[in-house]
Amino acid sequence: MPSLLILLLTLPAVFSTDPKCPEGFTLVKRTPTAKNNFTKEWCLGVFGSEDCGNRDYARSICNNNKASISLPESREELQLISNASRLSHDVYSAIDGQISPRCIKKYIQKFFSFKSVEGECNIKNQLFTFEDGNTDPTFVFSLLPNYPNKGDGHRFNDTTPFVRAISGCLKLSQYWLVKTSTGHSSGGGDARTDYCMGQQVNDQYPKSDEIRSVFCGRPPL
Image (cartoon, rainbow, N blue to C red; front, side, top):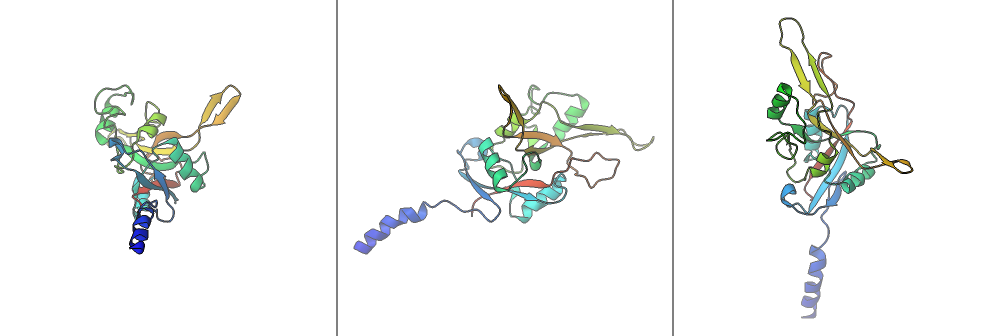
């Protein structure tokens, strides 16, 4: 009987231990909501490689780590993961989020503000498509400008159509400048859009900036 009592007392301690993340990932605790699929714990990691501005390449890096392209849900998560990964504060990483083809078509036809346009292409609606259904993108949305950061238009020759390109893939850095009464101090996050094809493209196509890391996310073990 005493041994049974000891076993019952130790069971809560055994089952209350925090879940673990694979090597390279950091565990983050979240408030479960409908926007993050009621996720309480999530594993985030930043993995570096060449030309993560290429969305297919960045996606493959996460897939090789049994994860998907992800993004931080708060400034605290961004700082935690950036510090754990020893990221330079002014270096951008690829994150989840790509402007939908329907909204790119509408934007090319007529410029609009992400935050004031009505309908599906408002930033609060279906402007972006996401692969990670367990992260609320509201924090990243708060850091974005009202318009794509880049646009390009060109014609290869007289017989081809005029081609327009919009920077539609999201990237994020930990660093921004906050003006204070004593000058400037570092804040926590700067999100922008960049081209999705990376740098290893024909010179006739617009290239993204150097993006050498990607945020990956997955459930705990």
